[in-house]
Structures are given as C-alpha cells and as structure tokens.
Length: 560
Ligand code: ADP
Image (cartoon, rainbow, N blue to C red; front, side, top):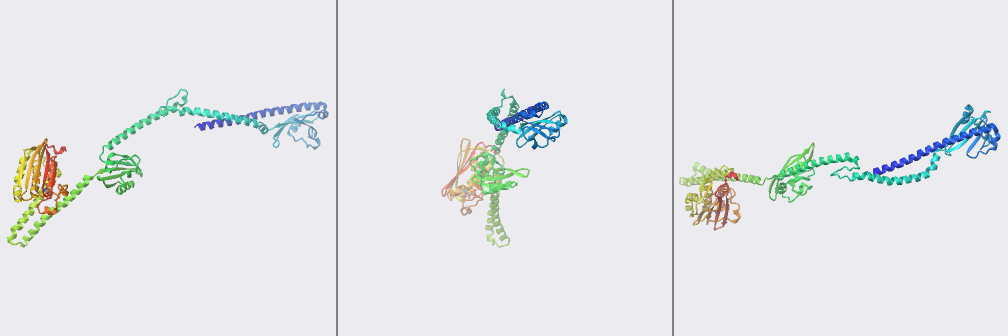
C-alpha cells in the first residue's frame, strides 16, 4: 500500500510538472506570436506610409536589419524591391495569401511554417495608393523550437521536483499508512485525528465480536464432543480422506494398544496391521467395512464407515469395540455344543449296542444281568450328565431360583456327606466334618450342589484308605468352606483348567473314574452366584484342598 501511494504521488507530481511546462510554454508562445504579428503589422503600416511619402528612395536608404524583411510588390504581383534578395530572381508574389488579401481589401496577414528550420514566418501586407503593396515579414520560432530552448532548464527543474516529490511522497505515504498499521486489530479504537478510519474500525469491531462468538461456540461444541467421546467405552476415530486423524478418543488408543497419538498423524500410526489397512481402504472405496483385529490384549471389532459428501468420500468414522469376551463366549459355546454331543453320544452308542445284541438274542441268558448292569450304568452316566448340564445352564442363564433363605452350612455339609457315605465306603475313604455352625443368606439347592461336587470329587479322586475332611468356619462377614482330601492330587499344569466345562485332567486317569467334566464348572458358577470365590491348592500324590469363601449377607444377584 505504501508503495502504491508513493508511486501515485510521484506520478501525479511528474505528470503535473510536465503538463505545467507544456501549458506555460504553449501560453507564452501564443503570447509572443501575437506580439510578433502585431510588431510585423505595425512595421508594415509604418513602412507603407513612409514609402507613400518618400517613394522607393526611402526603401533604398533604410537598413531594415535581420529581424524583418521588406518586399515591395506592384499590383501585378511582380517584386520591385526586397530587403534581402535581388527582386529580379524572385517569382511573382500575387498568389501569396497576404499579398492577394492586401490587393483585395487594403491589408492582409498570413503566416507560414517551415518544418526544416522549425520557424514560422509572419507576413503582413499593406496596399499603397498606387495599387502596389508593401509586405513585411518577420520570423518567429515554432512551439517545438521554443520547447527545445527551454528543455534544459526545465529538465533541471523537473529533476528537482522529482527529488522533492520522492521525499514528500515517502513521508506522506508513510504518514497515511502508519495509523492503519498502528490499529490494534484485537481492540480497534478510533483516534481523534483519524476520523476517516471510524467506519473501518467499526466494521473490525463487529467482525471481532462475531468471530469471538463463533470461536466460543466452536470451543464449547468441541468440549461437548470430546466429553461425550471420552466417556465412551468404544473407540472412536474420525479421519480425513487421507486417513489423517482428526479426532480420536482414549478408548480407541487403549483398544488398539497404541501408546500415544499426536494430532495430524496417520491412522496407521495407531495400528498398522494388514487387516486394519484393508478394512480402511474398503471404507475409503465408499462401503462400510468391518473386521476383527487381534491385538496383544484381546480381540477388537472394527467398523469403518465412509463419510460421504455428494459423490465423494470426505473422511472415515471408525468404531472399535472390545469383543474379546464375545469371541471367547462364542468359542466356548461351540466347544460346549460339540462336547455335549460327544458326551451324549458315547453312552447312547454303548446302550444301543448292548440293546441290539439283546434284541438279536446274541447274549447268553447268564450274561443278561451283566449287560443289563452296563445299560444301567451308561444310563446313569447320561442322567448325571443331563442333570449337570441342566444345573449349569440354569446358572448360566440366570434362571436358577432366586432363593434367599438362611442356609446353615455345617448341617448342609453333613447332609451331603450322608448322601455320599455309600460311595465313600465303597472307595474306602473316611469322611469327617469339623468347624462351626455358620449361616448365610443364599440358595440352599445351589450351595448343596457346590458341596456335593467338591466332596464327590474328594472321594472319586482319593485313594483307598484316604480321607476327606470338610471344615466350616467364618471370618468377619464371610463363611469359609474347606474341602481337603488325601487323594491323587492335580498335576500343576492342569490346575488352571479344571474349572473349564468338560475339562478332565489326564483322560486316561479320568476314564477309570466316572465323571462329566462339569462338576467344578457348577462349583465355580454356584460360588459366583453367591458373590464368593473358590481357590484350589493341590500336590500330586498328596491331596487337594478346595477353599470356598462366601459373603454371609448375600447381595441380591442382580445388584452385581
Ligand atoms: P469330573 O466330572 O471329571 O469330576 P470336574 O469338573 O468335577 O469333572 O473335575 C475336573 C477335573 O479335575 C477332574 O477330571 C479331575 O481330574 C480333577 N479333580 C477335581 N477334583 C479333584 C480332586 N479332589 N482331586 C484330584 N483331582 C481332582
């Protein structure tokens, strides 16, 4: 802006200066031309009157100098006298404009311009009484010649004007721009001397207010957005079409296992796996895309949706959900179904085989009792299995009766040991109970199943002559049931898995002992139902101790 004002001022000065020079010169020239014409006219009249009185002698005797030329022409146009040339060599002058005018009307003027000498000849002719004409010519410089004469001093003046106008222009332009530069854009104030800036400052102030209002709104909606996304357990990432992350909540970082993230990074900095890339590229193609990511700490479902604007994908919205549990449950469900089918099929196949032999009369009458016993034992196994599955699915589906009665554990344990006394006797295991009477609020049926399964295992996996002891005790607010045996124990490497459904330690050893592999799952879920915990300590060849801790005041199950 300073430069423009500066150049503008200088141009105006130079143009004005040149115009002034031209106009002054032209004005002066016009004036001097008039003076020259008037001088020539006066001279012509004076000389004409002198010739009228003194005749040609006056002309011969007078020296007219170099400034004027006097010519005497008779009425035919023939030159009789000329102050500069021999009249005989001069051509007829009757066609000269001033001469023909004088011949016609007494006096005549005309001027002629010579481009070669850049001069103008001013002529005036006066007719004498005898019809002859006196013509006086004077020479006057042309405008161009006048200009050429004054050009040098004028150039000097022009240079001086340019110099001073440069100084003035730079000062003026700086002074004009300074108050504009000095405006405090954040808090524009009108200064007394610069009232012209008032509309601009007013506009600035309005704009400032508008921008600040919009910034506040933007900030508050940004805070709202971040508050909402930060409270989400799902991960949310928003990217531009080049996959540069525009927004990302902390759940996304956690679920993708990414340490930190800086704005402007590519989404691949958060996860660079082929599956993830493929999913995002599909979404960039305009289709919603899903994939399952396996990260160090679980499985994630990723849903990438394109954000479309008209026909273009202008970014991606990526949702990340933790599906570890869902996937594990799905795996468990599949395993459970296949295990159940297998466990049901085995006894049924045996029953079918024996029944087939009996039906075809292939069994001798002496063996019928033994075959019948086999069928009973396989049917028993089936019934146990089905009972276990029913108990477990009730616990699973939360359809177990919500009993909340007072259950006295010592007498419950006595009942369970009573039910198992026959099998203990058969195995040669001595069962005992100790401790104190502890009551808690809970489900008698479920607690009975928990105790039954623990004691049943303590007998089944015991050795002949071994022992089983149940102890009921309590610490503040918690009842403790300890079931210890002196049996075969559980090898260390299997301990972590014994609570899984259908898991049986070392199939060869378990195949000798009847079981479904569901007993400890029922124990685990029964204890969870009562908000308790179960732990196990075992030493191979020495025995096993299961400890169950239950809160005495059972919380309502649906309060968990
Ligand atoms: P099962 O029907 O086979 O007894 P469980 O779920 O009750 O199924 O037990 C799972 C596995 O844990 C059993 O196959 C057994 O090998 C082991 N186990 C459970 N309790 C004991 C115990 N008291 N002593 C030794 N091993 C045990």
